[in-house]
Image (cartoon, rainbow, N blue to C red; front, side, top):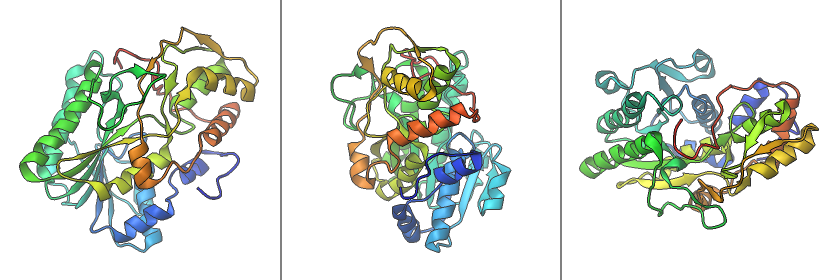
Length: 341
């Protein structure tokens, strides 16, 4: 990405950088046939993706509407040219009343708080996708999933590709595979075109694995390195690839791993933050030799590698933490190995 800043000074600049559309996305939006609707648009990534889509459509001179749907859509999106609709996606009548958009990005889901309230997680992650799939059989759907549907692998060996068999650990990951199966089921019956986006850790300065590690280094808190490796990708790159993946939606649904090309060592990254922040990290635990790792070569072949390099994100994050930038207070729990979130 051209003209990346050396530092990101505040949240306004962060949101601007996160939502910058690539030239390839602008070209894609110029060719897009019909409106774009984003379901589950108020989460950590939703506003970035919606804003990026609107900016790309505007840059392309496209007339497509960008529609953000969630239980409580962010009001500020209306001032940015985005249509918003409040909708409880668990209500099939409410889903049926949504506009018949030919292009849909499905971002709805539930993760944290699953342990102890598993029924609500299954409802959000399985029933909602079924309602959406059976309502929008004529649409193309890019549906967010997670790399957590794969099993733990040997960190010194090969990462999981799209051909790797699922092996979800814990009810959250099982319910995410259930989400995929609902789209698969409706696709087999109706020809619905979809693509499953198995995302592994989108990051920015307020949230994500790097924000977690940097904050713990800064605060002198222990960092568990039992799961010592993780994948990650700049949130803006993840949104770019997700939007462009609509072009490869198919029946049966295609699977794409969405992450960066890096196998990131948590302990080495903590040491890097220690040098940048002037505070030695407190590392605990012993590297198990296993991690949740995905190979995103297929999506990189389609969309190119991530535009924002890992080293730049680390420097941005260290500077952000040093200056007291806001953290969303939603740790990723990257160290969790038993699927309990």
